[in-house]
Image (cartoon, rainbow, N blue to C red):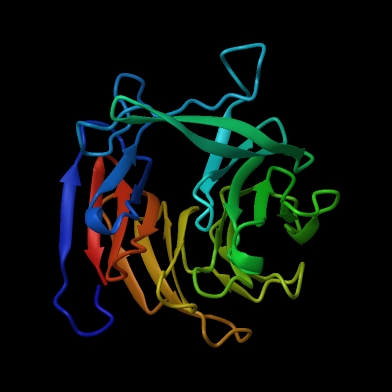
Length: 289
């Protein structure tokens, strides 16, 4: 895959278990570190370094060691002490983290619920902070009721419905454009297309990316460009799209890569935009674009 005529580079790593999720480190001194996630109980999620430790356990159920199953979470990029989670109990929870006194050489970290709100009529499947309005207070969520909803921590008495799936299919994921906070992408359960939305024009998609031949599993906007996005699906394909001609129809991707299995996730490295990571089966592949 090459945008600028560079030689193609692909690095492949195999895990002892199926890889369902992964993401890049955002630390400038750990640019090539990735964390991998699996659903297999006998294996822990991996970060690739032995000194990783549990720092803090967040649980908003004071009467039990267990809370309703979480479906997703997102760190606030402007305020690293804010964390949002979504749950099947129809709620989104915004957590505040605090660093306490130093014990030995370790800063003690604790957390509390800043706010918990009923976000959807059914299960909430994803949450993501927006960079709009300063990047701290606004976030969006998607859920089983088929809607995309936007919230402002300064005005939680109401929310804005950005989009509703015409067939009320559950929406599984959303992803904000990294350069232009007016745009976000979402996808429906078992859907073969990605919908691009403009929050200034609610309820009407500005583009539909529909070249996949099986259900889409992952979306990743380019960290350095407002008009490039990568989608990945069960058809083994990772596709990069140029959407700068919106609202005219986007017919075909500008780049395509075929993996050896159904792609479960895709992530575009924020600290080094030449690299995209995908995972399928028990494999992680890092692709230079």
